[in-house]
Image 1 (cartoon, rainbow, N blue to C red):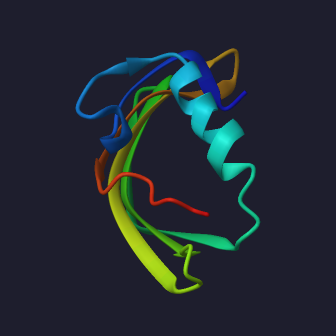
Image 2: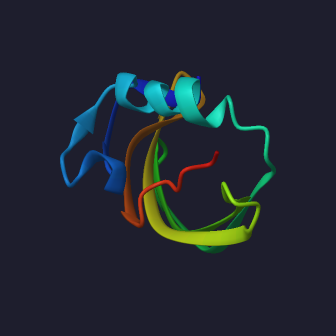
Amino acid sequence: KICDPGLTSFEPEALGNLVEGMDFHRFYFENLLSKNNKPIHTTILNPHVHVIGEEAACIAYIRLTQYIDAQGRPRTSQSEETRVWHRRDGKWQNVHFHGSGAPVAPLQ
């Protein structure tokens, strides 16, 4: 699993609240993203990786997401993200992320 079960996050969809665990994210994957049959393309810009010892790392980047909106028009959204990773038993897991920018656009 790429995400720690206790993953914490600040993101636009959480309206400024700290969210803990996977239930909040699972809702989007099960009800929005998995049912979308329109193409989505993500580009990561200017990634900066900070290795913090043997068991921790942080990456900061800009995410551009291209998608087709409900009217069939191409759109691009931008978010700024920081992710904190922890290595346990030789495997890296995302333990926290902070996303800024517009909430996920309706992908219908």
